Length: 197
Image (cartoon, rainbow, N blue to C red; front, top):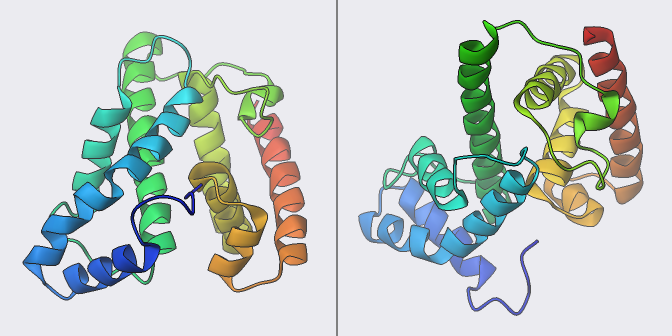
């Protein structure tokens, strides 16, 4: 997700995020240029999962997510991973909001059935149309209410693109626990999406 040969030192980003959260305006000004390419890669990955014909571009998604995260008035971030997790979550919510608006205009808000294979968890099933995205979002919101940690595992692995080892580090659990949580969350989401139909 974040190549080691990238020119930006991860520790520098963490330090700047902390300083910006403490009100350092110079640190806040330096954050976006340092994280822009990583945010753009994250946005491009999110957009690649959208159905063809999407009008929102990765650059626009990055800028809208940046504004939702606070823009120049950054909140206090615990770590670099915390920042990128929040960015991925902001992008997810932007895409879901956009899908809801489009769906409401086209279909009067009535959801239609979608295949359970369109949940997006299978790497081969990447194109999510608006309806599938809304179903996935509803199922994810239900999982958050059911088991927040398992939902965090899905978000970090699927939305942020962290490896299982990185997810374990962020959540402070072992990789075996992450594997179990991920298997459970995938099955739970599949059942929830099937139930919604």
